[in-house]
Length: 120
Picture 1: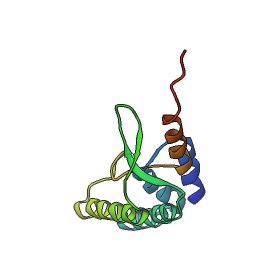
Picture 2: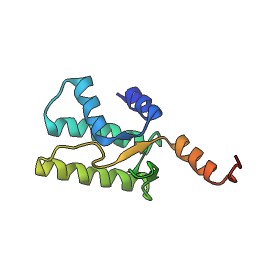
Picture 3: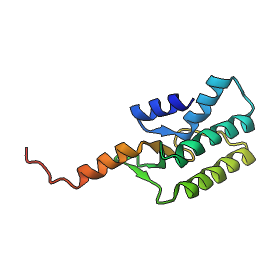
Picture 4: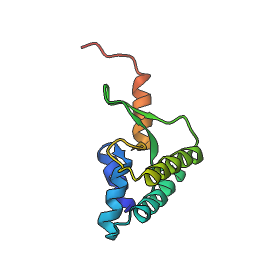
């Protein structure tokens, strides 16, 4: 699942619900709490090792905004929001909880922001 998650994030931003789908496809599990736990474990590992970065995606301009939190704070936030979905029985949809991007892509966008505008 780790490779699938990194590969998906290489292609585009990934939302949390995609991790739930990856768990179901790779394990065949369907119990919501178990699927959520496995997805949280995977997301936690990837965030804490710096492989992915959680944040929000602005729909108007499609800019990804990393959360201004430490990896540990980000994991805690995701856990709280996931627990609330489980508590209420609400399905996790695209864009719920958070989106993920790669650190290198975030750094590249930041680098380009600092470049002078090119005249056409």
